[in-house]
Amino acid sequence: MGHPFELSKDIELPATPEQVWAAITSGPGIDSWFMGRSEVEPGEGGRTRFAMAGHVEESTVTAWEPGKRFAHRSEPGPDGTFMALEYLIEGRDQGGAVLRLVQSGVLGDNWETEYEAMRVGWDMYLETLAAYLRHFAGRTGTPVSAFRPGAGDPDQVWAAVAGAFRLTGPVTEGEPARLDLPGLPPIDGVVDLAGLPTYFGVRTPDALYRFIHSGTDRGNVLVLGHHVFAADPDPARTEQAWQDWLTRLPIG
Image (cartoon, rainbow, N blue to C red):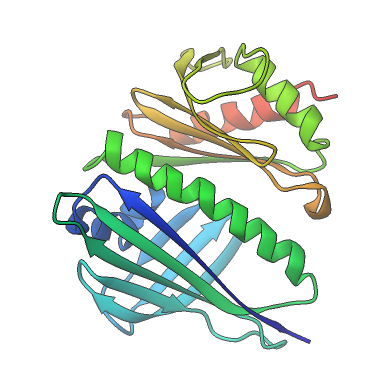
């Protein structure tokens, strides 16, 4: 039996409504802050496509009001499950904008775990959207993904990730962070997300690095979802370097 749900999130963004619109309604814009790779066919009735780790989801655009409202909805599955997403943009007289995200639909039997993952995950992705608009507006990020199922429980995973970035003690935003990655230049940046035990992020002058733990109920998967804004002549090589690093990361 399906379980109807709805969740909403509001965030103030350091950008004009037009900049927010570009970031949430185009494939390159979405790829610069959200996971996986996205495509959007503009206009009501257009199609959207999201691909990650061999999984593809498609939906239909149900609202297209430039600078104000964008929504899309998937077709119901055989069990009646579906997903709908709506973005509402409101400009501010003093500058900036407020974005309201509303996600709704019908979830399957494991709905409680799935709902909690979406609720917390959106916090990370919306903060990443804010970081993108604040530091990289107008630029296009190349998404980099890597996965390690069964990585370990959150304490083990985050101890390993923090150690790799030369962080000691409680992880706090604003801390300098450095990672040596075989095959790629060293990463020097600052912790800009500290949402442990679920997510962690580092910002550098040319990238947003994002790490998220699925939780014990969802297989203890450690997921890397980075956004690189520097020119990269070989994105496949970069992604493989991160997958190799993740596979070798000593956890536990």
